[in-house]
Each structure stands twice: as structure tokens, then as C-alpha cells.
Image (cartoon, rainbow, N blue to C red):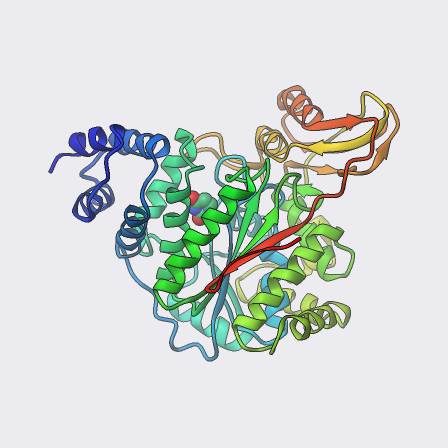
Amino acid sequence: MRMYDLIKKKRDGKELTKEEIKFFVDGYVQGEIPDYQVSALMMAIYFQKMTNEETVNLTREMMHSGDVVDLSKIDGIKVDKHSTGGVGDKTTIALAPLVAACNAPVAKMSGRGLGHTGGTLDKLEAIPGFSISLEDEKFINNVNTHKVAVCGQTAAIVPADKKLYALRDVTSTVDNMSLIASSIMSKKLASGADAIVLDVKTGSGAFMKTQDDSFALAKAMVDIGNGMDRETIGVITDMDQPLGCAVGNSLEVIEAIETLKGNGPKDFTELCLTLGSYMLVLSKVAKDFDEARTMLEEAINSKKALEKLKVFIEAQGGNPLVVDNYDLLPKASLEVDVKATKAGFINKIDAEEVGIGALILGAGRETKESEIDLSAGLKLLKKVGEEVKEGDVIARLYLNDESKKDNAYERVLNAYTISDVKPEQRKLIYGIVDKNGINKFN
Ligand code: URA
């Protein structure tokens, strides 16, 4: 078999066989196939797409490209959640301790930033001392003792995704349904959780921009998960404007902490309560969605979830004092206000543009090798539906390198559309996909 022939076959819109998919996955992991040929194949897949069978085969080959974790030593039904990626998505930092505080074991493997979206691992590393590299035994012990652990994808787990993810990030081949589904599900299946809640984003800041594509992505992933005996549910959620207000690693950690203190942005708090409810139901800690939601609200009100966050941070080597003292987190030296150029209502905030703005400021990676500035980012001080006067501060940029200011300012300003009429409120949750099929909410 030759990689050249596979690229040509896919370029011409033909279906790759199981053996051909195995050939390129194994060859890439073993370093026998170079980045440039795999980049070409990714681009061919991007344009020509993959069939369901190709997607399932790719997922299976990726999953078996490395170790498959055995979490059977953890008591209870281990539940994982994964987001398809968005802007301002700091959900895991609040949700993992929140669900753990209700006694459901959260054994979670997270990823780094990709494209214009941030990654949980980068955000957690903004906490001084926090380690995302846990040996298997420590990971299992932490979940058994504290009900929560979040680790990075080690080189031994789905090495194929580690390489492909980084390559897709810099070759503009992220937003393809089969590549996203196989990337996420291979990791979820290899990381051993019994049940999986998928947060499938839809809108301008998501990799899937339309609702139809987002439901289709959810269906593809839910079918893969359930087909492999892991109860899987997909929740389709809004990413047409960034989630919450903070975008950037340190800033998002603060917003997640504030949410567990009961002061979080409304949309972000609601998302945590919704996803958390499905997690508690799948882990059989709650009998139904309503009971689960009450348990989660109680965990926030009683500060049980905040205490769990401190325990979680400490158990992974981080300084738990950050929860009460934000000065311990990386802090940018410069702040710049972005001002409205006209009066009206905020009609739209293009999440992708905001994500790129944050990336320019240093919060994300421009190339595989780029270093992240953990303190850089921005805060959206006005969100969709709010009224502004000309000159009002709509966003604030946080940066250390002044040369990045103008470019980021323009991006963030242009991300906002201000109009004369108040826009209709968008939904936060569009529906769910589970083993019974698609359920679109009215
Ligand atoms: N998240 C992942 O883990 N993989 C993708 O391809 C996109 C989002």
C-alpha cells in the first residue's frame, strides 16, 4: 500500500477501506508517513467527507493506536463529558467538581486548545502547580478518594489523535464531522468511562455552524458510543456567541470559580446545571433530570462544590488558595477597553472572531510550537440583547505584548454587531440525541 494512492483515492471522492485506514493511522503513529502526506489526506477528507463506515473504522483504529484504559478499579458508574469545542468554554473546571460534589465519579481526560477554541488543559495549567499528567494509579486513586480527576491525554492513549489533532489545528482541517467524531470518540472510548455526555456546540464559534450539522455530528458520536456499549448522550448547545464572559486561560479559571460561588454568568451556570444533570442521571446518582438539578443547585448554594474544587486542585498539585485569591493566578500587565462605535442593541457577537482575537492576544497557539500566554485574553462586558450607548465599554482586552493590541482590538470590535432593534433571544439548549434518537427542543 502507498500513502500516495490513498490521498489520490480520497481526493477523487472514493471510500477508503478498513485496511487502508489502518495503514495510514499506524504508519503516521510509527513515524513512517510524514506530516505533509497526512495533511494532504486530511484536506482530501475535509472536501470529500467520509462515510459512516469510514468514520467508525477511523474511530476504532485511532482508539487502538495506543493503550485502552481500564477504570474498573474505580467504584460506581464513571461518567465523562466532552465538548466539541467553543470559545469561552471553561465548563470542565466548574462542572467536574460540581458533579463530584454530588458523589458521581468524574474520570476525565481533556484536551488542549484547537484552532480558535481554548482547551481545558491549558486553562487548568493557569493554576500554579496544577499537573495534568497523572500516572494511572494516581488518577484512579484520586477518583476513588475525591470522586474527581482530570488528566491530559498521555502519549500512550490514542497517540494517533495526539498527532492528528496538532496537525489539523495548523492546516485548517478541524471542522470536518468525521474527523471531529473520530477524534473525540476514540479518546472517550480509550479513556474508559462507562457513560459519556457530549456537549455538541452549534453556531458561529463552533466547528459545526448549523443546527443540522451539529445534530448530525451528535448522532454520529452517540451511535459510535452506544454501539460500543457506553451509554452516550449528546446535548446540542449554543456557541453563536462565546460562553460566559471570559475568554483566555487565567480569566476563564476565575469565571469558573465565581460560578461555583454562585456568581457565574447566567448562560454558563445554566449549561453546567444542564450537562451536570445528564451526568448525574447517567451515573445513576439521581433518578431523573429534576432530582439531579436540585442536587447540583444545592451543591452550589451550600458551597460543597467550591470545597470540592479546592480538593480537586490540591490533589493535582495545584495551589487551592487561588480559589480565594485571584492574584495568585497569572495576570496581564496591560488592559485595553474596546468601545462601542455607535448606540443600539448588541445583535450578534461572532464567537469565532472573539476566539481569534483572544488567540492574537496570546491565549491560543498560532503554530504547533507556540507558547501560550496564560494571563492573556479578554472579557465581554456586553452580551447579545444588551443596550449600549456610543463609547460604552463593550469588552476589555488583557495582554502583555503591546504590539498585539491593534490587531486584536479590531477583531473584537468587528465581532460585535450593533443594531437598532433588540434581537430575539437565542436558545442555550437546542435538543438532545440519545439511544432513542433525536429530540429537538421547541
Ligand atoms: N475536540 C476534539 O477532541 N477533537 C476535535 O477534533 C475537535 C474538538
